[in-house]
Image (cartoon, rainbow, N blue to C red; front, side):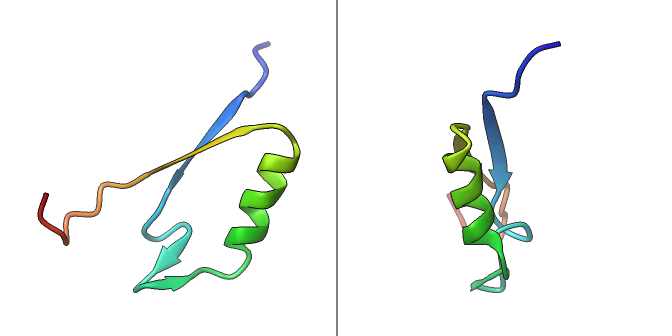
Length: 50
């Protein structure tokens, strides 16, 4: 079995919603980092133009 080395986190709807941080999001990110996991952020928000 392969060990997890990194976590990909979606932004909108997972870490924040309507420009407000979702409760526990920053604690969850801190916990992942404390466990030595790589943390990367991504999104497919289409409400903003490229």
